[in-house]
Amino acid sequence: MKKLLENQSVGIGILSWHAHETLKNSLDSYPKSFLETFDQKIIYFSDITDADREIARIYGWECVGGKNEGIAGGMKRLAQALTTDYALLLQNDNPLCEPNDLAVDHIKKAVSILNDGHADLARMRHRWNVGDDFACVSKYLKYFDVSSISPQYMASPHNHPDTRKKPLLKSVLRLIKPSIARRLKGRCIFIEDKPAQLYPDIIHDHDDFMVIDSSALDFTDQCLLIARDKWLDVFMPYVEANPSKKVPNGFQAPELCINTPWWRQRPFKILQGNGIFTHARFDGSFRPEHHTKMSGGSD
Image (tube, rainbow, N blue to C red):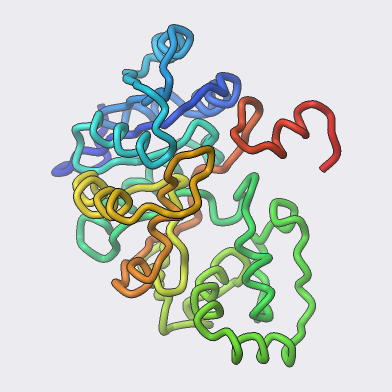
């Protein structure tokens, strides 16, 4: 077995609730040689069933499960089930979208950068092939014009946001809502060609990656690579001590709890490269609009 890092163990974990077709699509996308680089691979099933266990058995993954505790509770249980130094925390709708060799190299470099203390966590969702439910660029463009659109930018996942320049309108918005503008500035990484040159105060290049200040880019629980003890000893205690008033389906979501002044004022350092996972659902989504689409309704 080829290890990602000689002196640190790395595990890959998936949080899943129903949505078997979505999960199998993701599992099918992970080559055997990709999975062999991890020290542990485990699926945590919320409301675990015999069908869940059978999928894990067929695909050769360890599995555990319990009652549904939402994304926050599930991500905590998943990290607790892993025993590795680092955890790549995925959800059942995160298929791999890059070739195996590139993906392994990407994770290896990211773990090394985290291990050297240059960043606190890494976003592993693809920078360009972002997949479903991604509004970062549209929100960024409400406050900022684009300096130079990256040739790798893919407009389709972003619902073709308006990239026309409106300097006066946007300068007024930045003037009257400076804190919101600051929080959105880091989203330039999903459309701009050279973000570190554009905003050197919050972004700097590091090898093949960028390091972004958490004051300017939200936390996301999608495709998260992090030291397992940092997730369990720093982030999860904060989530539990600071529940959000917004409770999707009656449960806490890490993104809603963590994206507060605490996150922005630390600040944490976020690692982002090209990324290797996208976001794709096929069944069993908790989002009502997804059920409408699945039943043939209009967008």
